[in-house]
Amino acid sequence: MEIDVNSATITEDDWRNPIITYLQYPTLPFEKRVRIMAMNYLIWNEDLVRKSKDEVLLRCLGRKEYMKVMRDTHEGIYGAHQGGRKMCWHGPIQQAHSVPMNPVVKPWPFRGWVMDLIGKIYPASSQQHCFIIVATDYFTKWVEAKPVKSTTSQEIITFIKEQIIQRFGIPESITTDRGSSFIS
Image: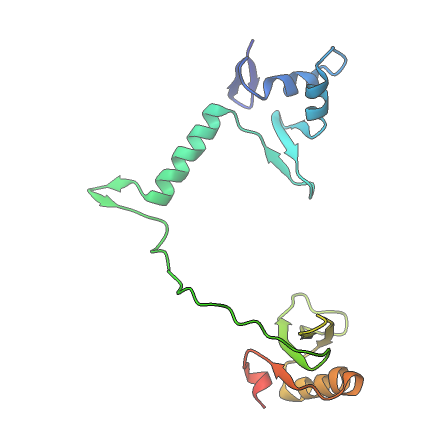
């Protein structure tokens, strides 16, 4: 038995065959495992696709299609010899030195904060806010955030005064990425 699905021939030993047959003829008797498996699949434009958790449709490949994709990918990554020269898509792998991580330990809540900016956000909000200032407490992981129109030093100072100092007191430390808005 052969089924033609989008110019790909599905033979009797193909894993997709029972699922496709069940989806095409659901009134025929099938094993319980096939009926349960078929709940996650559907036929879309004559292709068998699987529904992912986030509702993305993933095309299911047979052995021949899979081998072709793997061969093409392998040639793309490791290069094809052209004129005696190897062509590669990727550059050399960068090696990072392994160093022990130093955790930031704060013994009490709201003594140490880390701050950063998120943005530029497109499209801007209805009030033309394009950036978000975010501060996170090291101890409790409490997050304070505020949308802003610009990333001037005055905006950062106002955020620290209103969102951190007036609500939680003067912190022992504020860690930033030393961006130009945070330096002053």
